[in-house]
Length: 266
Image 1 (cartoon, rainbow, N blue to C red):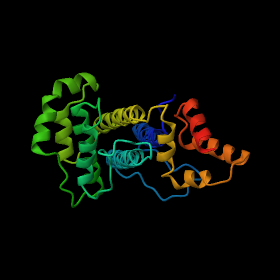
Image 2: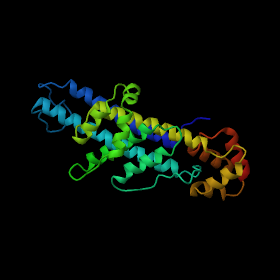
Image 3: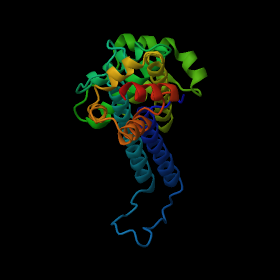
Image 4: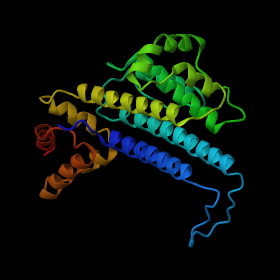
């Protein structure tokens, strides 16, 4: 059984593309010189102006974009996986919220997942607050609570050892002063990915037992598209459609479970 749901695949693709683009643009900017001209065929008006200022402004823009894109992808992942019919932990659901509360909600959701380190949950909340400062730069009061600041600083040595010399004091200072660095953002994004993978493992672990096929069917019928297929008359076409639907939406289920679901419905 694969442990990659469609939810996680989409998240990793989105974040991977964002990080790759951030790094690619950063490399391109580092190689830019005062003599750089607009390539032929690129129909834009552009003047490099002050080389260093242009590089810093552009690098800051792409880092800020990666922050916003990653956080939104994480929120989407947590919302979708916890609303899956097969997410059976009804006490842990990531619901829609507005504003800075979403960053806190992410912390609350993640701290209830087995095997997610306490410092990870706070770092991901910090990334969520950072997103709010990026998107609402002139009005945001986003920040970690004083207690969470104290807690995360208690993990300073552990974080530095495990996250490639990441300095939490420096990161917090950069956050508070609206300074966006590749080091900070890349590290926080990597922690968000770690957390998403653990949520994925948790989801797989709480799936119904493979012998409980009737429960799988009961839960999946909450999905309108699946339920509409189930209503069809028994036929080879119905069998093919159910099989295909399961392959697209729940490919991580074992062949035994998928076959059991099909047989139960037919």
